[in-house]
Structure formats: C-alpha cells, structure tokens
Image (cartoon, rainbow, N blue to C red):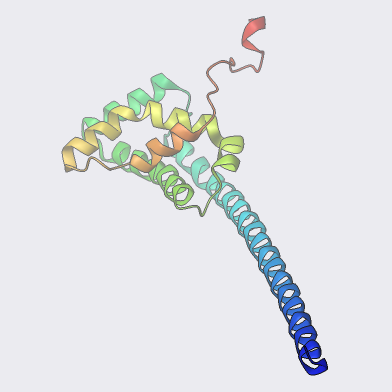
Length: 177
C-alpha cells in the first residue's frame, strides 16, 4: 500500500466518522424538536381546555338562571327532560343549548384539541352526571332523528372520566360513611 493510499484511506475514514457524528447530531436535534413540539402541543391543549371550561362557566350560569337544574339533581333534570320530551319549547331550547356545551367539549377532547385529563380534574363528575341524567333525552333524540351517533362524543368523554361514585358528595371517604 502506497503512502497515497494510506492517506486516502485515513481521510475516507475521517470523513466517515465526521458523517456519523453529523448524522447523530442531526438525529439528536430532530428528537429534541419532536419533544419540544409535543410539549408545546400539550401546553396549548391544556390552555385551550382551561380557557373553554372558564368561558363556558358564564354560559352555564346563564342557563342555570333560565332553568337548567344542577347536573347532579336527578329529579330536577328528569323533570326538565320530561318537559322537553312533552314538547315544551323552552325546555327543549335549554336542554339542547346545555348539551351542546358538553358535546363540543367532548368533540374537542376526542379530536385531541382538549385534554381529557384536565376535563376529568375540573369537571369529570359533571360530565358523567350530564351524560347519565340526560340519557332519556339523548336516546329519544337519537331515535327521533334517526341519528344513532348523536352525542356519541359525550358518551365517549363520560367513559373517560374517573368514577366518582365511591365518594359521597360531602367529600367524606366512603369507608368512613
């Protein structure tokens, strides 16, 4: 092997090492970019969720003043639903406006625009109660309009919520009751 061949081999080996190091650095940068993008998406999703929940507090309060009962007031919700099923226009309007708030929340959560964990922490029990207590209305609307997927996103979101049935409303653990 000549001196030229040795130098050529050494230079080739050096450029190979430099290429591997450059590729490794590029792969590391891409990994860091993906991680930063994922972190930014999670932050924005959390922020959007909290903003929606905050923005709808006033709307929910307005609907309460107009006649929407507390979400966990099964008797009150049943009475409102029965009025709506009987054709009372104001009851129908209240129920559809109220369920639209939660259905939109569910659609956005299922589309990964809102964070279901944040929804669960902030309104998990409410979502589950709304889905459970308005079930007769939801079922009747699906039947009436021939839309079996109506409010399916709300069903999905309610299924994602942590069960709170083990704790009584006053916050005392069930074992001490």
